[in-house]
Amino acid sequence: MDATQQPDSRRSGDDHPRHPHGDAVIEVTGLRKRFGATQALDGMTFTVGPGRVTGFVGPNGAGKSTTMRVILGLDAVEEGTALVGGRPYRNLRRPLCRVGALLDAGALQPARSGRHHLLWLAHSQGLPAQRVDEVIEQVGLTKAARRKAGGYSLGMRQRLGIATALLGDPPVIMLDEPFNGMDPEGIMWMRGFLASLAEQGRAVLVSSHLMSELQDTADHLVVVGRGRVIADTSVRDLLAGTSRGRVTLRTSARLRATEALAQAGAAVTAAGPDTLSVSGLSTEGVVEILGQQAVPFSEVSAHRASLEEAYLDLTRDAVEYRGTTVAEEAR
Image (cartoon, rainbow, N blue to C red; front, side, top):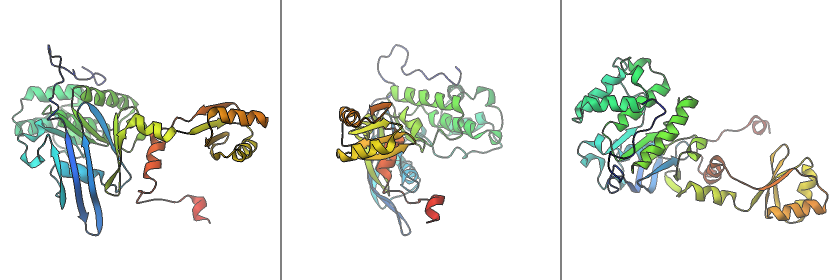
């Protein structure tokens, strides 16, 4: 198996997902935590279900990393619970066999080879060396497995971290920024790999700042800001809601088009050198107004929002650190 192949989603002769649904779930309820004067988590509540990839997104300081650390028992909270398969992480027997996680690709002993890193972890969980070789092959590190991990590129360290998460064949997988350091081939592999994990019936939680990658990968999104959930919805519904009632217009006569449409009661904003975004009129209505005013245009279509656009719209008021442009600073 090479790096582009995915693990088998079913056991031989078995028509059911590998993992029972009761084990493949993360339940986060009412988490509250402060770091000094900062409210890091403010009632964080969501569920990650089996058989799908759930994207976990939000601005810096939104509480994503803290929430993942709480789920793994690395941070305590003042209020609330975080359960994996119905139990707190601290109560899990052989935890690597219940939840696999990648939080920091650099958390390894650089003098050890990638294989020895995994063997050490496998031994702590009573797992055989054969399982180590299986996950090395799954993530495409066979040729580099006996090299010192300290010489790995960031993308290779990410693959080693994912191998670590898979080591115990757990029903729950949590990955923090797994696309970081990946080249285009690695990103394509990662998309298919995450999908295959979900197809096996696992609950897969992926934190990422790369909205373009989640748009092609995630089935569901949990959007957070300032320590709480802003949206908990399917990617399809989120994009449909952001796109609804908006029309994209391409025209060489932007000013004339803007005036004509505004007079008809539409809200018009510039979306590019020759592109306008129109709200308040259907595509048919826009075409009719432009035709009446003899305004030339090359395209009128229902707007299709990107995940990045939907995300920015949702988190506009939740950004803690916001820079300024050169033009704004000059005012």
